[in-house]
Amino acid sequence: MTKDDIITLPNQHLRQKSAKVGIITDDIKKVVQEMEAATIDWEASRAHEVGVALAAVQIDSLLKIVVLRNNYDNKEDHTFTTFINPEITKLYGEIIEDYEGCLSVKDVYGKVPRYSKVKVKAIGLDGKELRVTAEGFLARIFQHEIDHTNGIVFVDHIKDDIAAFYTLKDDGGLEELEYDTHIKDNADLWA
Ligand SMILES: [Zn+2]
Image 1 (cartoon, rainbow, N blue to C red):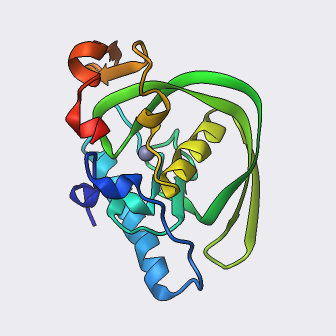
Image 2: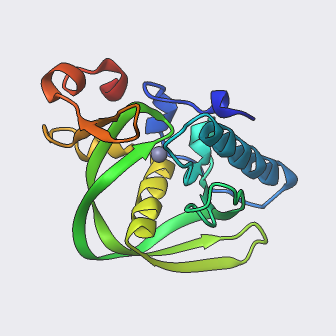
Image 3: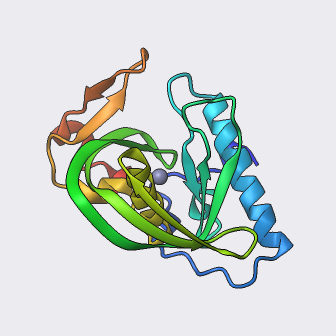
């Protein structure tokens, strides 16, 4: 799979809940491989962005699967950890606003409020239970990705916030998008 297999808004599948995975079959493992390949291919096409994580719905497979880069500070490291049926068991800490982008939302970034700490329960590819406590950016990633498995896109959290939307400039910096002209009636985002 390539970056072209990643679906983007206004595709309505992004607003649907994914189904729980039952047995981890070879077909499930294939979906995981395809998610990883699509993420790496997407990243290879972007100068200033990293493909940190992906949910299966983003390659149009409506299953509760998330893959997360093991070392997203190093673009050379193409290894991932798989979280099957991931669930947030606890949200805590403070609410912090920070920038988020999404492989399924073209050219729009947002400043999204999220909890600073999170506890996550999931199943690994080996079928064993995984429990993770995360904070900071990693906590944000889990909230963003688990939202995808529940049909929620990051823009849904900031829909009415006139100062929360940004776009990426050619030099990799972010520039605020004017809400009334670019966001408010944007048919792609709110279809
Ligand atoms: Zn996303």
